[in-house]
Amino acid sequence: MQICRFNENRLGVVRDNRVYDVSGVLDRLPVFRYPLPEHDPLIAALPELRPIIESMLAGARSVDLASVRLLPPVASPRKIVAAPVNYRKHIEEARSDAAIHHHQAILDIDRAGLFLKATSSLIGPSDPLMIRHADRRNDHEIELVAVIGKTVDRVTPEKALDCVAGYCVGLDMTVRGTEERSLRKSVDTFSVIGPWMVTADDIADPGQLVLELRVNGDLRQQASTADLLRDLPSLIALASSFYTLRPGDLLFTGTPEGVGAVKSDDSIAAWIEGIGTMQVAVH
Image (cartoon, helix red, strand yellow):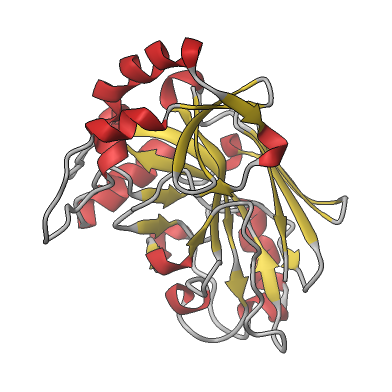
């Protein structure tokens, strides 16, 4: 199932280039008083709500996909976790390009670990990606994003995929420089996910998906998640060994080689096999 958020916080299911409005199911979510929960309420309730969503589809109003504004499919992640240099060829290009490494040691993921991005950097594909530091290099990085579906604390790799609610295409944008990754990658609008969330049951093997990114139609990145140094189960296990993961948390799995600069008025098309394509404008 392809679940999206669109327009004014409507909930939809995408089928055959149409969006079926199932927003009525949101009335079944709990109403919270302060303090707010430590998870995304929709993702946490999705196992119970999914049969209801499926039953609503036959009578749901639909609109053309091209006519809607696509929001991030996950509204309220409490954490955005990301994996640096998780493809061998990307490590090689980072170490060979001074405009990427800025004379700093590029550690492989087993030594670098993971990092966090600010949740305030999150947008959907219909919102523009804003270049805040136009005097510096701003790079695109396509990544498979896993949406955590249940509370996870020190899970083993063997059981890690059972904790995934679904998958999105992700853009982990970055300002090049000497500062910590978490700063340079947490600029407003620099975490893009979409175009929808494909539920985990529709992805037979997240470790065998082709990724492609084009800028203004030119192919920049092309690889497969089979080339990940640490696969998704290993990444989930690593993340959960340091902090508890909650429903709605996002895990960016790393980008392959071919990262490059974008500037205002560019157009990015990011595609992952089994998920789809998101078009993002750069302003």
